[in-house]
Image 1 (cartoon, helix red, strand yellow):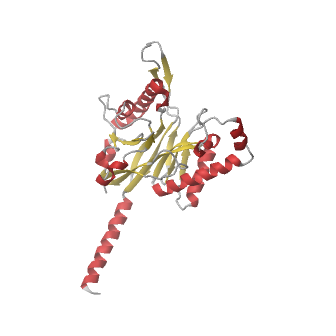
Image 2 (cartoon, rainbow, N blue to C red; image 1 turned 180 degrees about the vertical axis):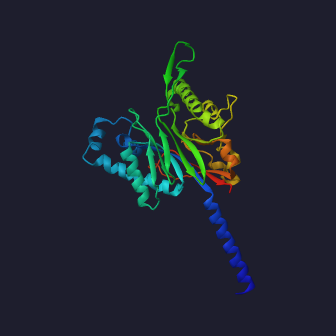
Image 3 (cartoon, rainbow, N blue to C red; image 1 turned 90 degrees about the horizontal axis):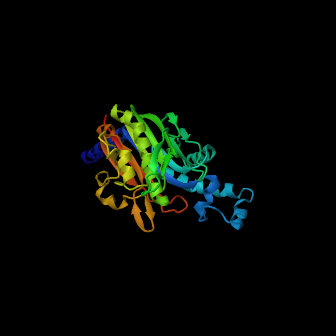
Length: 322
């Protein structure tokens, strides 16, 4: 072998070893709102209104029609999940356990195997939505819904207008990867479409989650809060759920420009509302996780398909220290 070829061979081997070492200590987590991938409301993916007209309902109620359309949508979503290729992925706006298992089978048909799968519950009665997690690591200690309730003001100018809420769509669990145990929350918080009432309820939901994970955080545990949080990076609900408005430790906002490559700053959004792009899907990390990492990198994936979702997945890659 010539000296030149020997040098190339040495470089190639070094690159392969570095790649193998990275894979051994890499962890990719993601959150993805699958937009009404739930059988009773899957017609929303095909441009239908939330409540079908009698004429359209007659079409969708034909034997097998809804099942075929759900399968078509699940196949489209599965392709994006495979492209994301996360080690652990939280999913929002999915349906029953049976719906989630059908999606998982479509993912497996495309060559990506998630041995572990959980679905939250119960499915919300109005939207039939649920949360789920696919994982390459064993999932333990599932709690769903997340316990607790919080008061909020339904009217700005009426101190008597008070209501209570829980976290309607949320789950928590643990998994262990590369010798580290992570406590993960997957949430789908109240939409902004309800005006002040919805905004106040969303902050109350954030308070419940903050109260729930705080004992873990203050004891040095690894905490991940992810999902469709329906607020922008520095809006009140995100500040509350991170801990920015109390004196306890904060969660890290991986949506900050610091975690994106310079050539990817224009991709720092997950939802396009009437031409305005914002990040409303988040992955928030305890400082203990960042301290265990050589690098934390965030990105989104533009799937370009209305059938897949009106959201983009948000992905965080952790390069853990040896």
